[in-house]
Length: 437
Length: 161
Image (cartoon, rainbow over all chains, first blue to last red; front, top):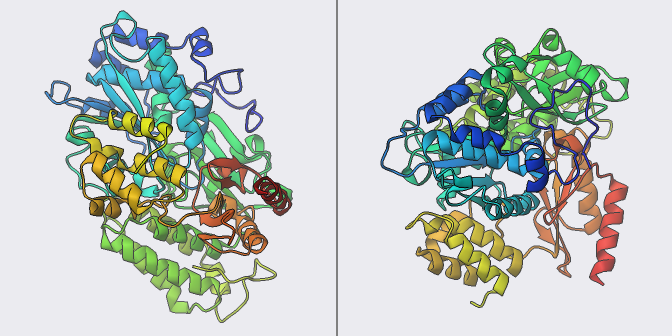
């Protein structure tokens, strides 16, 4: 059963098998031309695989949007060290629930993408780092791995190609920070998930101090289609500089919440009105988060003419991010939204870098005070000031991820902060309750 | 300590899953799977894991305090986790959490006296399009209303008796 009805506006490439009977089984995957892309790739030169991925204009789907083919080309293929393929399945960005479906409905598509990545850099082992809360997915993945081993799609000399590959699942245990690539690698080594200083990047010094490809689940899942149909065909689905489709999670005040696969460059207002069926209860749009709570927020006016791709969002000083769209209607209290987002970052800051550890804690206190009606006028500027002093001063992007949306909310919805001054009750809550920290 | 045959097999498989000399990688999975069986991360479990991966108990302690799913105190038989992060908040996840507090008579990371239930306000669990969402142990429940939560908790109470 599907979590939501598909939309006729979708372009289903990665999600083409969602909802089919037994879609997670290797038999149905093979019947749907599964693993043919791996066989094709096994006859290609490694550099040809990477060129095809480059031609697809595939960019990392976890949030940062780094060009995937370029990332793979940084791995020193001739290094005497073993190389690893690591999958970031630590999906934790608030608003994001897409990798779950890719693993639940089509785990073999992920395995095939991993194998092709392995061929491209001569890696023979891989780890799927799954967030601890996704235990049922580890069970689905372990079953898929067992099937693949049994049918000769993992292990020694896969299908007579001479290529060996061992693949394992690895559980996290509750930590947003472990979705950051270098913290994930620390966690995979049995340590606290604190970020590493870069360079060196994981391509050179990654898992177990060896060269590593580390990508998001959705990124690997795009690879079989790219090899099967060619990089150009995938690129042509999207817009220049951003190829293919993106799994988009519609959340918040929307009539038809759900996960939809849409071509890059899909118009924001069409996404809300036609895919999502408009704002719930006939309300007006107030704010829009394009790809997870780390992205600067857009006002309704800024959504006019905006499209879901990297450049359009960058031109509005936001990011495409992870695909976690959060839609907020006219009755949403932006102070409360800013506070809840900051509570999250304050909870998840690993404490390694002082600007992030202290900044998120102070911002949480300031915003809590504000929401309780005890803020002062100077606090409004102080929130922006503390946020700006975190930018670029941390090992990993969590500090920026906390600061950027906060700065955008204060700048764009300053009036709402002023409306909370002088002990005035929150204009959006009839019976105000105190927010606990 | 004596482990169940299932946990013993799980630990052994984990120890074989990492490159030679990298057995420490198994630490976090071992602690989580161990907690699932024992109910919490006990001193014995820490010693056991430390011994198997060749580190000190102190090194295990240092790591486990980082991860929010690892608990030193036993949680309830049914650990109710209510998400109040942004997508769930927009669907009154905060009110659902308050409802759960009242219904169970406990607060954040507390357990009922009979050990049947514990409650936790959690961060995003990856169910944002189906908000508000909760997890009971590892099971997801989507689009949860206060009435549905009541029915779910009442059903679990009956199970317990």
